[in-house]
Amino acid sequence: MLEFRTASPTAAQSHAILVEYFALRAAEFPGGSYTPTFPTASAFDPPTGVFLLAGPISAPVGCGGIRRLEDSPAGIRYEVKHLFLRPETRGQGWGRAILEELERRAREWGASELVLDTHHTLEAAGALYARSGFESIERYNENPNATRWYRKSLVP
Image (cartoon, rainbow, N blue to C red; front, side):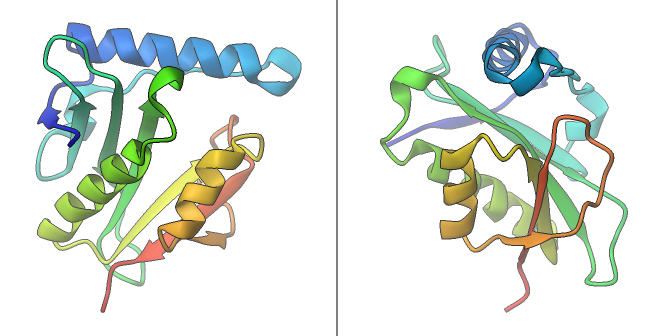
């Protein structure tokens, strides 16, 4: 079972895993034009957001966060950010576990929907989002690294 703990995205362990994530994305990004943006701590302060480290306290293997965006016509909207697992830990269902924990927390805070963006080259991520009930939507932000946008309704 994967363990989760909240952390500031600017804490040393969080920063280290985000550096690893951004370096991997930059190395694989088409055209070499990946633009990393490190998250601010305030965007992930409950209940407007949360940043999670996944795995043992001494050596997290993944991370992910949600942050509240401006409400949409559907209601309260949170965005999934920085969902990442170290490559050697993938294929065990842990990405789905992180996503489900983020969704659980968003529901606790009254979210009506989750949104996220990704790049079309992240095929495994796109498949995870589809299996988790996310549907393709029109662009909702100006992220230069994104080519696909998704939404999941949390309203029963």
